[in-house]
Image (cartoon, rainbow, N blue to C red; front, top):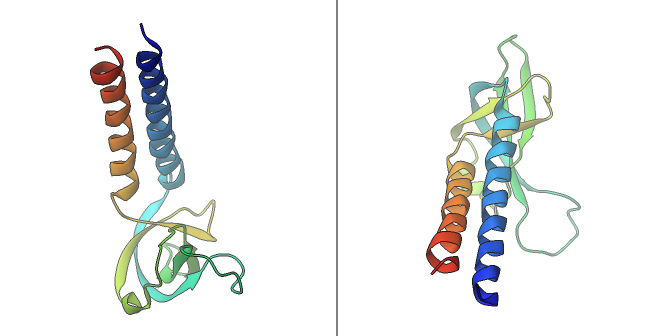
Length: 131
């Protein structure tokens, strides 16, 4: 086995671990949660407002929990650009009463990213690393 094959195998293993961690984090966040409709009330920058950097925008949504209480919470998204144009639209969020201050926006992005990372990891090991 050459050094390049070993590097591809290690890189593939790293991709598999990162993809699995991505899927586990998504599962851990939505486990025990309820999917609810929520209205976007604003798009805000995460962290200090005075810092100049790209990215770091999230939605602040309002929704009614199953117990009938109106909540306002930030999503755990991280967008590159301000998406104020989406204010007022309704999205679906995962709400977990154990962590009421942060909600997960319902989307397939995390699952797709995890599956793609795992697929790239297996491709790096079996197609590149073992040839």
